[in-house]
Length: 586
Image 1: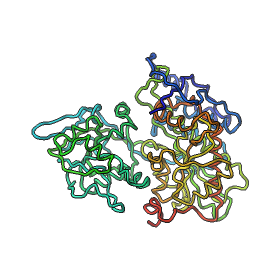
Image 2: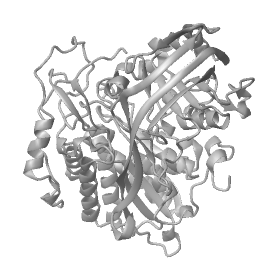
Image 3: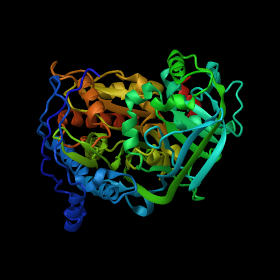
Image 4: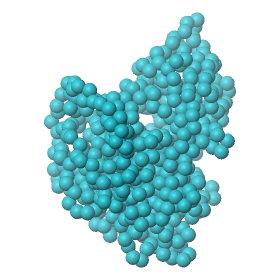
């Protein structure tokens, strides 16, 4: 990218605990000492060459009022090392959940979780792949090509068996998309029964953003492959995939577990047990998979870009083997309720969400000071979102009279594992399912340069657009379109779980228009995605612009207030793709 600027390394600021939160949530001294020892940072190493930077603040702004201070305190607390990156199913996450519950109580909200508590249990399965026994081999024309674990391929954890070893003929199925409404079928003329499917990610560029987002989802690809009888899947990365997420970043964290929801039968939900093995191959190793086939990897990569991919049977067989450790774990959503003021409408609920989890402790990464850090604290992603959720709740609680409809505030677990906490909540709500009228989500607002706008994601799908526009006028903030529609973030955060449950949803993000004509929010966003996203450097010492965080909370509250007081509940727009696919009654 053209924006490889770096922020100077800074010492962490002293932790501030809001006065309403008891200090009893802090870890015992012995545990803190052990945690500090575990995250010891190594000696400095040379840093990357410096590049001239845009005019973006490098010093964290000082909160200027009580609302800014509350948000800053919450971010600094939740992004502190003692929470160990807040990975779902870990003590660090549980500590963060306790903190949020105490904050909800201090605001004056009622518990809305299980058994009169603030917590909704979310049953999970955790699967960790093992290097021992992992294999991906291409057997063709009397020779065998064994790909190298980690460097060239990674097996996917298997939630249905601790060990698998299968060999079968292989079929390339393009991007694995069957979209009859668009006249597109990657499976036409191909027989997948008892075979291993080789597939690219994504969806054709000619698709509109909504359909491209839906058909790009891994879940939809696996569902289509399982329905057609595939017993194994090899996902092949393209150069475009690895431009967004380098293979080295994927491989460095291969030990990181994956999770699925655990059903009442103890089995993983949506794990497609008929698919008995799966692996991902790096773009650099793709030619090994397509060796001796009718087309080279480079030709197929070009065809994917041009939208001319066609499937074909591959010669010989593929062998997939892996071992997985599977264990049940539990995590918790944190749920609070603000009762509505209308005797009839109070039974309906607007659901506010922000995910509390991040990705925990992972591969060490050298920072700009040359020292290594293993704790992925997730200040922007998504301690800031949770802090804005808390401030939104405080604002609405302070209003009199209360909104006519009730409000639910949910700090969600396991977003980073596949929107699992949101999916569990949307399908197991603490109120009747048809009482959920709208979801308002905040995830990773990159507020690193002052802006004069807000970016609403997904607003075009429902009547929430008019509500948002009126609320933005109330607050005095401009609205801007999604700057990166090709990233289809509408289906990559927790609001998508509510959409799949038929509930209109909206995702609020930080703005892109500079407020001072000097510091550029778009450049700040690109820099964050390149240098800090899902890295240990996503710390509370980043220069978060607190006034924009307060403004986002105000807008969030105004949208909820308008939905809460409206005569009619939000509805999907006529002819909307997501409304047609998931809307209630479909």
